[in-house]
Length: 145
Image (cartoon, rainbow, N blue to C red):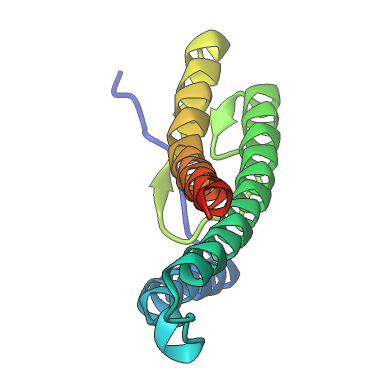
């Protein structure tokens, strides 16, 4: 007896949200490097480093907020999938056609999401590290003068 694969068709609403999110990411990737052109930094080295440290602090805080929101979404969808026994869960809007994958081993499924959360945390850790380094440099410059 041949096994029939089940598929879920994508919804137009989910496709619109997906394209909106992609457009927002592209817009952010284009505009963020232009930040210094829009808001010029001071020419003095010490003041410039302090302004960069403040800007990096804002970027780190925004990264943390986005990471927490994404982490909560990932955990919510993982719990929903394990409860329903398949990915994507029934009545879950997806942007494109997808094969329904049954969840036979919840531990393997949770480990996949832990790895996903770890990968999502890497850019956040980088932002915090860059801010901390800039902060320490500005502190040492302030004490040196």
